[in-house]
Amino acid sequence: ELIEELPNFDHLPELPQASFVYDDSGNRIGEIFDREFVSRHGKRYIGQVHRRRVVHSTQIPRMLFNAFIAIEDKRFPEHNGFDFEAAKRIIYGGAGGAKEGGSTFTMQIVKNVFFDSDVQSERSAGKRTLRRKLKEILALPKVEATYSKDEILTYYLNLINLTPSAQGVLMASIDLFGKSNLNDLTVAEMALLAAMPKGASLYNPRRFPEFARDRRNLVLRVMAEHKIITEEEKERYQK
Image (cartoon, rainbow, N blue to C red):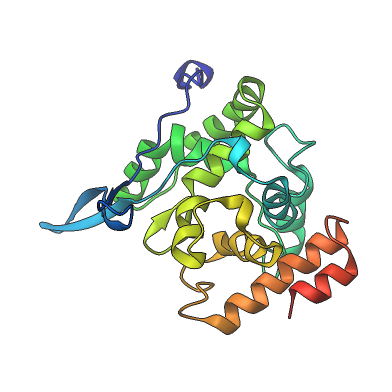
């Protein structure tokens, strides 16, 4: 019965993008993007702001991919959507102080894309349902079988909130570093972007530079542990 309730996974929805407005000299002078509104207790509030620029996997440096994998989902290349080791760590050791979370990239896409309406309904009702979670688990191998690892991670990097007012790695790169080409990012900047899913506001370097630096340095340390960068490079990028 649960299998019959699963959505169609053959198509990842197109993500809304912001449009940039330029003057005759090629300077960006404005943006156009969509806002969603939600109603609570008879009042209307701005909900999600769709302020992103979508990038293709070929536009994302492998180092940036690896930074996110190292800190967020280190067994991503091997698992089929569910990380049993991460789940076991949280169950028996607790999530407090963990370097990486328990949700895989695939789990976050399944929840926030294919079951988003279910999640919103549960939030409105003030309760979570086991039925929805079971459907999400059943969906994981189907999504993994339908899309490549690069496709899944690229979609995730375009989807997520990395600053309080924008989504996706490219818009975060533009906002934080003034760089519209991800290949122009330094390794330290890539590590900071990988640090931000844990708290887009808390680790925003403009608001809380010390918190941002500490989290960035944690990412660099994990990257060194995974041999993505050397110890010498880690020391240099942490300065």
